[in-house]
Image 1 (cartoon, rainbow, N blue to C red):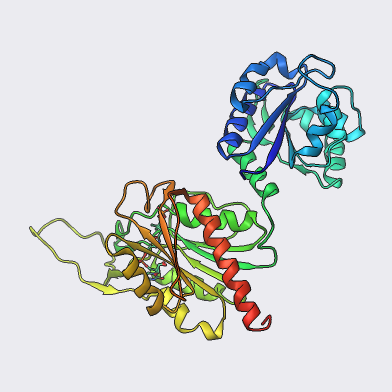
Image 2: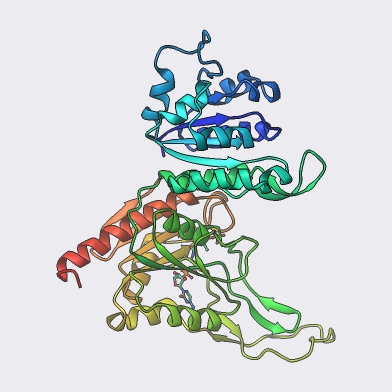
Length: 405
Ligand code: PMT
């Protein structure tokens, strides 16, 4: 994202204040952001707010001192994307009908960049057939129009019209700016923990939050992949665009992964699968009594090892993760060989800022040919992109060797 340029166009609605958070998130992503405001937007939030957040001059007047000649043309042609957030009914109508009577509307009509429109208004305005017709016209031009959120609106009514949350708009921006280099590629990702029941109210599990696996699924969708996500229980919402299968136990995960592996080009197992489960799950809650009790555990199926063993039946690039607290590299290399993998992501889970539950991760990528690639500390989103880059390269090399089959 670091080379990408985005113009945020803020129009005059109460949700203009949320655009400030959007600009902050875009800048944090490393994107170069310029902000243009309509005169009415300046009544809700000052240009100074956006100047401070973007680190750049904000333009809000066509012929004002802050603009220079031709910037209304250049902004939409030098950038990769224009995001109109919030987009009022009036501004949507102007864009639909080609009215260019201020800096932002002129910038839009001259743009060659992609355009993302984020409507926000009163629910009756939004449902008005004129607004709906205008939005349909924008979609027909292959612009991306987000559905507004539903709920309480500033005017006191309830219904559709809320500006989508800035994090949701950011995800759309990432999708629109991403290279669609995984188009036509089917990817299965497993994520999260498994739960192995002891009785109706207790189970064995681990600390996996699902963040790493969900980041992989999200990045793969963004890059145009066809994604199946098989997940143990987590607090996360499945990323839009994935085919989602929630599971609980290792056995359920095994079955679901095997049912969906056919036709997959890449399989990535980020899930933390319980190696053992209670020998039996008793039907009634175990009562408190004896001073100590013991629980007999039996081995769970190793899903990844079974995928590796049967790879000839469903050829794919097989990627595992290795969560280790010691001898990271040696243990990861051992798992790569034992499970017949193409790549393993060695994950040091002894640190507070990597592995389970964190938003960042520190990994070493270990390849079948003995290569090791050390990654710096990254967000899980960045690790996901790196893992997908390498998996795609391995797939291309494999297709080259096998003559495209
Ligand atoms: O979910 P987060 O909170 O974001 O945390 C991310 C993570 C630490 C869970 C993730 O980055 C990670 O390291 N996942 C693998 C965890 C793990 O179970 O590692 P392992 O070394 O025990 O297993 C090796 C590989 O075999 C893994 O790909 C695992 O999915 C697979 N496996 C293990 C056991 C089993 N019975 N079946 C399997 O398929």
